[in-house]
Length: 486
Image 1 (cartoon, rainbow, N blue to C red):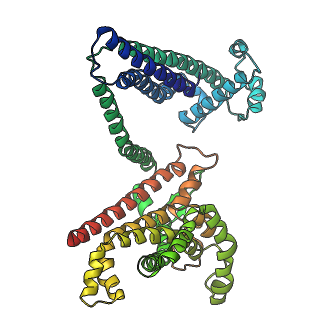
Image 2: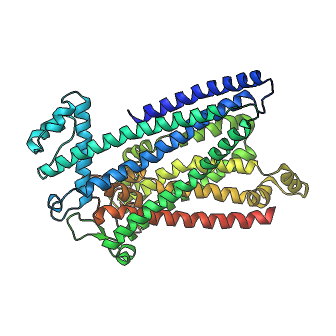
Image 3: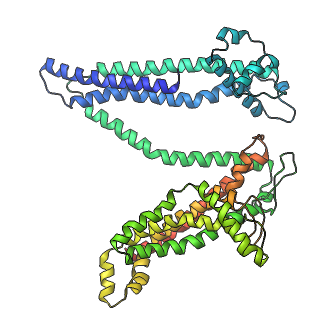
């Protein structure tokens, strides 16, 4: 039984518990001739919560721990002789998991029974054809020991899943029966229900924090593994990016960091002034009729997928810049360039800046405008000396959002700027960014434990620290100017 089916069963039991709890509370109060302390609905809610919350919590914990414990147990049974020379135990376990999933599909498809699977000889040629039918291709280096380990992995996983399902149902029924039995007229069911809901809301508020901690932890631990294999000094100071999965790699981040900043600078140089001017016009000059059409039309740009922007850069903007600017001026002959990606990305960022800045400018109190006009200032002087300084903290936040989007963009850079990691001032040369290389290093049939793969986590951690620094700087600016106008 799958986890989703168990969740549906638990939710069904909770619904039944709600009905039974409500009916029991009413009957108990009627029999004893007293009033309920809480409404009957709260009694039903308390029973439903006692059924669902502990059971679902147990299920979530079990789903998290089961793969870790099973893999740790099965991994210890693999003899050292089954690990290829120069390979890692984690790679063997990856094959074990793939084969175990394939065996599950074979049994689910009815090709063999459980008894046939148990009697199946641990021979590659005996199993390869069946696994290939369900999309699991085995290499020639897969040993019979790995196949036997995969069957043990599958058997352990099935047993643990069966025990998990029984345990979840027992917990749901046990807590439900206990909650139902303790219903009485004086029970403060409303307090119980509200306490559960308060805890649920508190847990929901911690999701963002725990997610951030998980992201930082995963990046940090894998980055530490990378720096144990590759010198940190060369990573941060080297000007060469040349990964070689067979050894001799040079993994310097400076060319990637330069490409990221260069493309983002070009994008923001286009998007910031245009977006801000659009926002000022819509907020201060445009009439309500024009604004009702212009603002939605501009915001349509935010809904266009980035892959479409990438195609626009590849097919239209890149060739135009190459044929009309780069080649006549002798600056380059490639349609993939920093300028191509930057300009298209800047177009994509315009609605982010204009829409947010427009809302922020409109939030400035009308009294500040009226006071400026009363002192004899013109409309342009009021905008420059009153409205923009008052709205500056929010506008800085809009710029920061646009900068974060530019730094994290991938598809436009892949299709518009190319994949060449180099240090160059020429904006018509092909370059690449950190995000593009993170994707390229983690895709393909590569060894996960190698420095060339783990470098993606070091790149991600560096980008995270860089973005965090921008956030801190923007927060400082916002607080400084906010104190001035409050």
